[in-house]
View 1 (cartoon, one colour):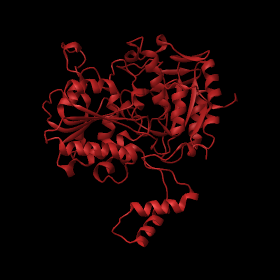
View 2 (tube, one colour):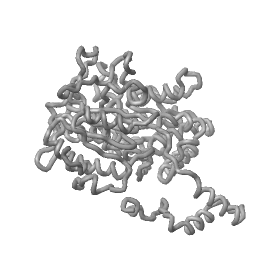
View 3 (cartoon, one colour):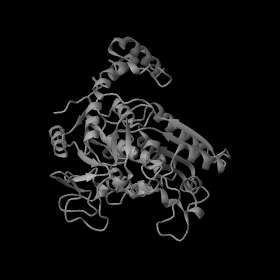
View 4 (cartoon, one colour):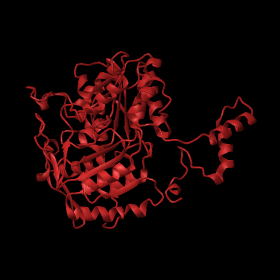
Length: 459
């Protein structure tokens, strides 16, 4: 009961236990159709209580249904409030009112992308034109492939990149939903362009001016590159400069299938993302079904994942960006070598034994590939394995970021930001699993710290 008792009644709702059955029936009867008789409402409430609880399907697998039928991705609590706020802004955008920019903030599994897909699913009903935009090739291309593989329905064109709106001006689009908006760049200037960043339009400004209702969905603690500027403060600053009103909604809770709000909080404390001391997982969530494990080696992690993975479930191994990843070729030897364990990074091009990195998180054949933050961000899978490299180690009573041990040139660009960015990267990797996670650090001191924080004695 411990984890459940933290949920106290508020304006979003309350928790009912079996002992509160009569109160739940009473409250449901008051909320249900008042045109029906009391007995009919009681029967409906009873049917609701007997409905079998089941976890929702994984995000990418139900996106198509969310867009076309909106049946498998129901919105709850603040998700519905955010959705309705945007709907209202769309219907009043032509009435001469001040333009509204909507910012939705939420952590892993809080349902930001569910809001995005629900909004896209309502465009036909509203007779409006809009797009979903991200800064992630893996996320956008995976959605396109799953939703419209033959490019026959037009859904493929709903998914774009944040830098696709440089030529759109004067609110030419009804709505743009920028998902994973913490990844917004300073500008959309292509690499190698003669036009300097100083003279280029901020990417946030481009999106706001392109849409009648711009929507930004973000988690500021998932910013992993020095050139990523998406934050509530920056979006608000640009919006106010353009004379726009800003509405911010914070999503609470964890709605990911099988996900654990307790674990997400534990990760934030473990990595120092929040100003709270870390606690042992075994003390924090003794009743939580989410499994947390520290492996003795990467091979031990793989065995742990293999023992738990069932049919149709997915398990993925990831690592900190501490090994080189040749851009223009596949290395002659596996990229990642830890003792006698050797594995490739995500493949640059499709191979006989696996897909290219764009589809690593969702397609079969990825077992021998190791993912990084750029191919894992935005996705979820059942079981996660995370290798801590030497770029983040535990020393004394704190984490120490070792910039010289990282191969992530985008994160290393700003030495002052690197400690924050590398912790955010491991936060992303640790929070991809929906049922459990196993960890290992190549640094012995850090490995001992992880064991202590999980409450797992040395084997």
